[in-house]
Image (cartoon, rainbow, N blue to C red):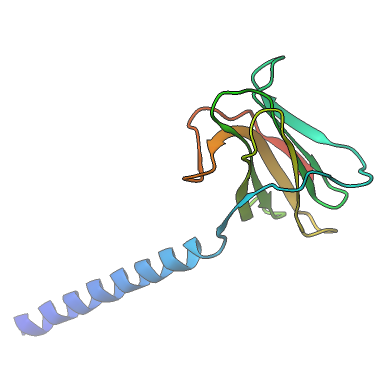
Length: 155
């Protein structure tokens, strides 16, 4: 009798742990990070307007902008500080859940302007949140504490 109870408890515990692991793996794979380098030296021929974020005061270390017309990013590295300008971004659905996210780096040095064209969903309740950061392209990391506040716009 005691053995049967012990086996049932072990079975229940194993089932619970399996479900927890499966749930964690399922949630983690729902959206994966997109890490890429902005390499285009020319951007869109026309845009509705750029929404921009920057860090570094008047002498900007990094300026990043987003245009919903064509889903373009603009990245400017304004300071010789050893860091790349980075746009950290995420797409949120109508329930404010992150469904896609990533970081785009301008790793071409001080004074460089680079563009990146993305393809985000249109005509829904989705929005984009983005911010300017400093980072390192080699290890593909963002410098802790370097980011601006978040900007939000419809996609």
